[in-house]
Every structure is written in structure tokens, then in C-alpha cells.
Image (cartoon, rainbow, N blue to C red; front, side, top):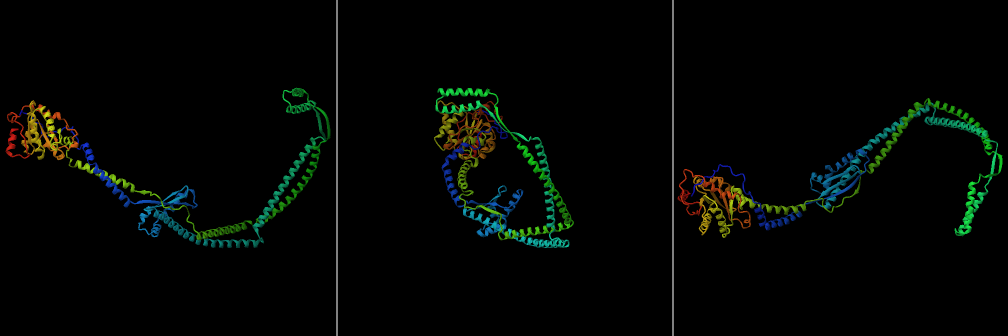
Length: 637
């Protein structure tokens, strides 16, 4: 065996370009496809279970509602606050306890309060009280009961409030009666002292009479001034109008009369004859001639005139006489009203002396009577309200049993459980496929072993695949140089080294086959120093790994055990038939087989034994061979 340069020890840094993948996605997809029936069966069973659970265990929620309108009279800015305050009393514990007792429910008060909700609109004063239950009829009954208890609580509170108001108002009415009696007594004493039956009436009558007389006097003055103005106007008209004037006057227009007659004849003739008739044309020519003469004729001549007494002058004279009489009468009326006004003002002045005190007493009496009337009216309205108190709400739409639930998880459960079953079955298949991080294909072996995979084969699962594996390895082996050590990762793989080397040797012995470098078996369970020394002297180490039986930890310790980080390659055996189509060469396999060329050019170490002719391949049939044989193999190495 030619001397080779020892590879780097285990302390060297590994290649950062790590080949392969920790888990091959294609293998996972094939695992899912291989177990598709089991996954489908799990999904079907989950679907049946989901439907049963949805029907038997999952409850639905039905919601019923009562629509109310708030009829309370409040300010626009206070609607939202007042309405919300009223609605907060719907779910007070006292009301919810009554609802629970009437419906014989075992639901806690807190849970029952969560099932009841209120929705309000301050703009329209519309309120909706809703309740949810597992049954549609129960939802409607719960809503009606909540509203009924709410109304009863409102009526009870309103009646108590009105009774308290009535008591206070009765006291106020009694106090007002006493105030009225005291004010009337003081006023009556004042009237008796001055001998006046009704001071306000008499004063008011005197004032009204003085005002009326003063108004009528002003009207008389206005009437007198109007008569004087009319008299002055009539004088001016009478001075301007003459006593006589022309009463009538007549004018003569002969051509115009003839033209009108000719036009009338023309219209009658056109109605009887055609426009081309000679008579029609002759009459049209006559009309045209008359129209021209009328247009050119001078102004009409006066035929006669009648002159008589001017009627306007006579009317003005008569109006002047009548206006003079009216003015004298208006002046007399004004003087009379002036005397009456003086007498009325004297009476008002007499009554005004005691008017201040009397007015104060009378005002106090009227105010006391007004307050008494208001309090009586308020008490009467309160008593009416006590007999028929109002809740302040009116039902617009009663509760009805809903047809469909507002919240149901049955469909979600019926869909989610089969999906979860499908996902769980798929995850179980994937977990089984990746359990232990075992290498099943070449890409996984290259990743965990940190070295190239030079071949994959279904052998020994398929005995006939050994020839193809030997042919693949033989072609690569004959193109390399240096010594190639072949080892099994474990006891099972160690038993496969001998058949593989035997098949490679038989291929090398065939006629015409070119000679190849040395191939020697290696036992990975031997002592570390000889093992590492043999691995370092060889050009490369080829490790056999059986698919699906070695974890990433087992594969990751190969380089540390051999004491080198390069020149280690793997052969994956027993690959499943459905995974045989995946890549069989992974990583830089050319660099692996070229490793011997560099080692051959390097001088052998000083302690290396003299090279011997290459012996025929020796096979290791068991991972644990006797110590003498291991020593002999180490010496031969």
C-alpha cells in the first residue's frame, strides 16, 4: 500500500457547506402518501365523532328581544344620560332574582345578568331588551319575564315616589290655604276702613273710563281737524271750478262710417263668394280706397255742443255747507269730552291715594290664591298618577321565539374536529417519520454524517440490487487512488461488508477490468489509537449505514471516532423501494474519490511500515473480531 498523508484530526473545523438536509421533505410526502388511507380513516372517524359531539355536547344560543319606546319627557341634552340610568336598572340583582324565581332557574345571578343586554338610541328613544338562552322558547320567555319584572319595579318605584310627593303636596296645599286666608283678611280690613267694596275694580273702572274718555276726546279732536281739512279742500275746489261747463259735444266722421260699412259688406261677401269673384275684388278695392282717405283725412268736425251748470261746482258747494256743520259739531264734542276727562282723572287721583297699600295686599292675595290653585292641581295630578302610575315605556314589538340561533359552535366543532383529526393523523405520520432523526435517504445521511453519500441501494432489502451497488462503487473506486477502508457503522452493517467486498473483488477479477486501488475492511469497534491511525493513513473511509436504523447522534460521532473530518463517505443500504428514486449521490463525491491523489504525492511518515504489495481484499464478517486478528489487521494496515 502506498504511503499517504494523514488527514486532519478531529480538531479541524468541519466544512461550512454542509450537504443534505436534516429531514428530506420528499420522504415526508411519501410517508403521507403511503399512509393516506389511515389518515383518511382518522379524518372520517373524527368527522363522525365531531358530529356526535356537536349534536350532543355543544349548545346553541338563541336571542329574543322586546322593542320599547321611552315616553319620558326630558330635555334633548339629557336624553342619553337619563335613558342610560333607567336601562341600568334592568339588570339590578333584585330584578334578576325575581326573574330567576319565576322561571325556576338555577343559573347564578352573574351568569343570568350576562345573558341579558340592552341597546338604546338617544335620537329615537327606542330601546331593545334582549335575552339569550339555549332554547328559543326559553329565550322569548326570559325576555318577557325580564321586561315584566322591569315594568313592575318601575311601577313600584313610581308609586312610592308619587305617594311621597302627594304627602308633601298636601302639606303645601294646607300652607297655601292659610296664606290665602291671611291675605284676604288684611285686604278686607283695608276696604272696610276706606268704605270701598272693590278697590281694584273701582280703580280699574275709573282708569278704564278715564282712558276711554281720553281716547274718545282724541277721536273728537281728530274728527274736528279732519272736518276743517275737508272744509278747506272744498273751498279750494269751489274757487277753481266755473259755475257752467260743456255738458255734451258731437263730431262727424263720414269716411270712417263708410269704411266700417264697406268692411262689413266685404266680410259678408267673402263668406258667400270666392276671393277671385269680381264683386269681391271690387269691394276690396273700395275698402282700400276708403282706408287711404281715412288715413289722409283731417280731424273730425264738431257737429253740436250743449252748455249747462257745472255739476262739480254744485257738489263742492253742497259739501262745503255739510262740512261746516260737521266741524261745528266736532268742536262741541271735543269740549264735552275734555270736561269728562277732567272728572275721571279726579276720581282716579282719589283712588290712587290708597292704591299702593291696597295693590300690595291684593297682589299678595292673588299670589296666594294662584299658589293654592297650582298646588291643588299638582296634588290632583299626583293622585291620578298614583291610581294609574306609568312605567314610561311603551312596547313596540313583543318578544318572539327566534328561528335561528345567534351563536352556535356546532358547525365549527363539526368542521374543526375532522380537521384536527386529519391534522393529528398527518402529524402522527410525520412524527413517526422523523422520530429519532434517523437517516432514511441519502440527503439525511449526508447532513447528519457531515460527509458525501457516494451510493444508495435497496440491498440487502432487495438481494438483486447488490450487483448494481457493486457496479456503481466499482466504477468510482477504479477511478480513485490510494487505500479505501470500508467499515460498517454497527454490527448489522459490519455483516454486510464482506458480501460487498467479495462482489467488488469479483468485479475487479473479471477479464478486461482495469486494476484498482486497495480496498480494505475496517472495524469501527476496535481500539481508538489503531483505528484512528489506520483511518489517517488511508486515502478515504467508506462507511456503510443501513437506512432507518441510525440516528443523527450515531452518524455525527463517526468523524470524531475516526479522528478525521474529511475523506469520509457513506453508503446507504436497505433504502425503501418508494424512496429509491431520490438522489443516490449527495455532496462532493468527486472530492471524496480524489483524496488519494493528494495523499500519494505526500511522503510517508517516519514510523510508517514498509509498503507491501496490495493483498487481496480481506473481509470482516463481524464487528467484534478476536484480538489477534485485529492486531494482525492493524499491522497489515
